[in-house]
Amino acid sequence: MPNEAATIVVVEDDPNISELICMYLRRDGHRVVAATDGEAGLAAVEREKPSLVILDVGLPGNVDGFEVCRKIRAGSSVAVVMLTARDEEIDRVLGFELGADDYVTKPFSPRELAARVRAIIRRSARPAVASRPVAVFGRVTVDTGRREVLLDGDPVALATREFDLLAYLAANKGLALSRRQLLDGVWGPDWYGDDRTVDVHIGQLRKKLGPDLALSTVWGVGYRLD
Image (cartoon, rainbow, N blue to C red):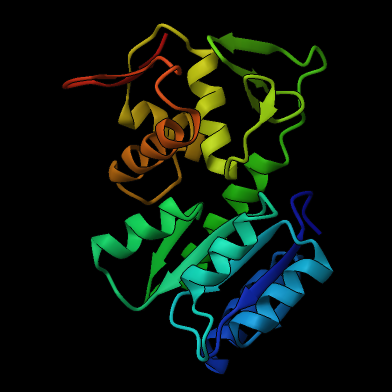
């Protein structure tokens, strides 16, 4: 069993797709719990405390995938990979704004999905540095050891990838980083998404931490944290 084996909740109403995803994940040594609708998915996340959730957008009933993601993010920073049959940019943006870590459009390769899962879990499993470095940017404090961000001393809830992005910018403070550099450094070189992902997450950081976070857009390059 690989070192990155984890508990994963799969929320997908199509039994064929769900079975295929579960088979590939179990092949990698993961413990997989399947749910067929939003309410069952939320209950499974609460019960199992998984390392990652694979979440279909088009779930039956009154609770679709976006609402499930919103409710998960209200109380957890667990990694979320969203699945959708739609390839509209607005759907991807909404998913990322709600705190999704990755977004996969159907039809997809189950091998590619399993590879993305491995990459996300591998990054999440990186041990915190012993010195627990703390960086202060005006009213914002970034504690990478505790994976905690404070605004005026009060904790701010960030999605997993939002925190990782802020921590990477903090570790490279004062440097103008391209979107490609940020994708490679935060999502990893094996991530399949596009540059728009970085812009959405930057927007979320600015919304949650306010103008006191000196996070600048460097036109024609990317972003810089001063």
